Length: 441
Image (tube, rainbow, N blue to C red; front, top):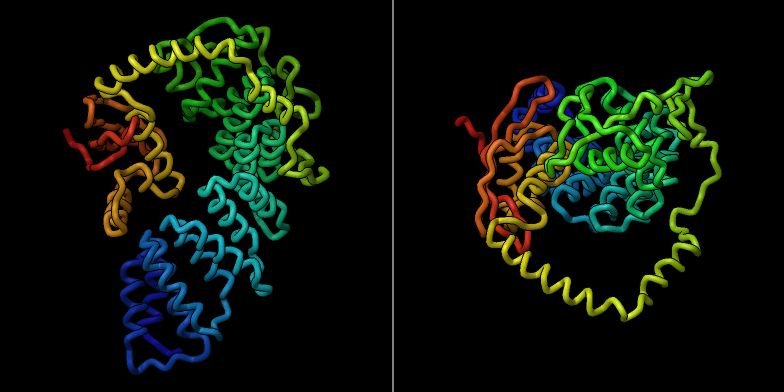
């Protein structure tokens, strides 16, 4: 293919100017003087799809990738199916995305199977199929061609936590340190590790993991991690005190205090480089031996867990009356809270989840009022102006029974703050967003 437009598109694409690249790719397709050789047409549509995917125009990207696959001579079918799957994920068409990722895995010429496995894990997670998602993430982590399995291991750990298997989650999270993660990724991994240790009631290790997450500074624990940190510190008998060494910590939203460890519980370095904390042991960035371990069955559930679930189903009728009375009182309280603008999830939680999803590159539309396909595209365009940060502060909150308004200060990664005015509408017991704009008040 000899096309000036195509060459210009390539230059623009490499520079990150996807709009100009898209225009030039389209011009190449419409140029009657261009003769397409074997596979050229598929290549151009593949490039068009890549531009649209970068611009979060997921539906249009999916159409372009399908056109590329119609060119039977086009060789990059595995990569095209993976990107098609990503586009379908962005559209919320999870089952179709799974089919696309499986098509990529079925292509013997495609050598980056770990990317398709990550896509499968994300799609299965969206469908609530945690076992299948965990299996896909594990396959991605064990793929020898995967240059950095850290993301797969973090996702696998989250699946283990969701399956009620914190010990396996700990193994997955600690394996991240085999790959010399960056400092921000280390901090996030230590936070996840702390949550897993806390879920396993291994509180000394949980405290040390959270401390290491906060050690370099500039890291803010999530609300669940903050609560787990407090619980772990209390469990090991730490003395009460406002935490001074971590910015943003001190007093929780409910007014309770955060504690820091007493001098007797400070960590001690071992000769092999690991860290001891009471009876615990938190890994450093050395080989954890995760990939030498014997593969365990992800689906297996212990007999004790099954017996415990059966026992719960056969609780006696003696407490039934008390529960009914409690529910009646709770219902009255709930009605009053509803009229005062409270709900579940709260306005604060919905806004935080929106920013978390945006920072992670996940679909933000579930946090908005139900919309048509055209409106979803408008929502994504609005979200394109939202800073990719999870560090936000609610500076103003107005509650009413059916509507609410929130002003958020979002801390940028490179310094500075942007303010957003967010309107919310009651959705069932909780809230959903119906408008978002920059706020300069």
